[in-house]
Amino acid sequence: MTELEPFLDGADYVEFKEIESENSLREFIAGVFGWSPGWVKVLYGLRYPLARVLRLETARPRRRRTGEIGFEPGDAVGSFTVRAGDPERYLVVGADDSHLSGYLTVEAVPRGFRLGTIVHFHNRVGPAYFALIKPFHHLVIRAMLRAGAARPA
Image 1 (cartoon, rainbow, N blue to C red):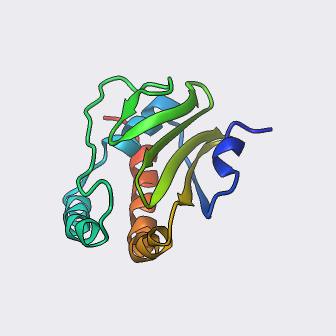
Image 2: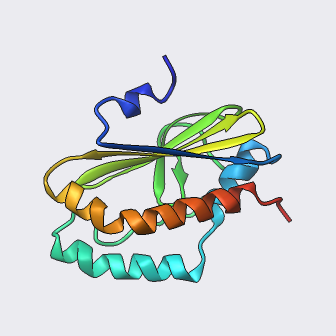
């Protein structure tokens, strides 16, 4: 049984992407969650009116600042909450809303890292909302991988 199985059980959408990197797990995670270019902020800006129209529970992101990357359940990493982790092997963060629960996973793999997306829909708004954001999600995930794999300055 892997550490991700509880999050994968009953998932409606699962995707994993890998990248090679010599960074440590902490460096990779810091790069992934420290990355926030203007075009992503614009996408979140477009999400707010959509969230209101769809009557989503959280129309604004729950952005929290965090210094050190935490691996204990309940720690904040960006706008996510840590669900599980091991500083040497993996991290699972999540966010819950009325329409879906989403998890991002980061796993150390030989020669790099695997970034995963796991989504559980709660009602019929979940799949509709995810279908609208999915093309952008792919762009964001690929960019997050590159940001995590970049060598720290």
